[in-house]
Image (cartoon, rainbow, N blue to C red; front, side):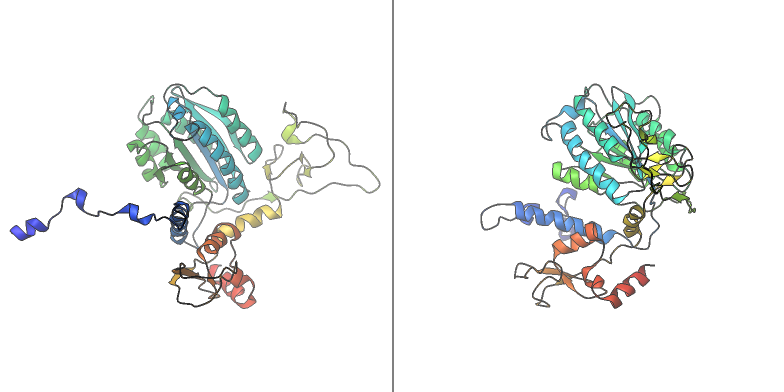
Length: 400
């Protein structure tokens, strides 16, 4: 009995790890290489967790809720939490629409116990970036109201058709929220409507945010620094698995074309997206995309026709969405035992420091960790399979 008691450990002693030993200095005494390696391996771990052949919500409708309360003036992120968030959000918006060209985004801010919509659901990245940049001059006052913001987003998302993916992303710096009612009722309403809510905390974990993410099937993380903040935000770029309430329907889309008559010049007209705009871009021009159903003119794609409601896209937009449905196969991590001298993709020479290499299960080519991440995050096609027609066909037959 005495021996058994001596072998027991306190709870805070169990699972003890010397985490500082994972970071090692290089030959010049710097830590950047070790930190970069940890970040890369974390990316690859997330990549390995992705499941192929799963139903995804391709037509995403995402509301981003930003905290603009007094807590965002803190300087733990440089120069301030708000300015750091604005800078990272600009790149996130561009990446989001690059990877999800047929999706839409809206932006809501919460400050002084109120929710304010600064950008409606739309597929125009420049419009959202302009709205985000205007936040640099906003006054950071009062407490946020998480419930008011969620209710505002829910009212807009409820009107969407059943085949649309509904998501909310909350970036919250405050540790408190001032709500007019019971937020648990709002969380249950979000869950019943199939709205997926994810939260990124800038300070510390908040119980209501954890419950919101768990109940709606979203993610909840608290940042460590600005690099980790960017990494967590970019996790939201890939479309999530489709909600159970998401229906599969055929969607009517239009592919706009240029209207030209031989022997005549195209007349000066104004596009529908700038008819009621007071911005500098509202000018007469000759170019544009014409809706094949009602012949309304638009200056950019994708867009929903304001006259007939038809979704207007181009073939490259659908092609860019295709790779989410049929991703490249996850590479197998194996111990490097001189299987090959160089990486098949970047032709980098393997050395003794490369303890792990990565092999494609289809073409069996060997890659380094940098190429593994590049293939799955950006290229979306295995170079080894693409250069061998037989393995390329096998890979596509197995994913379809």
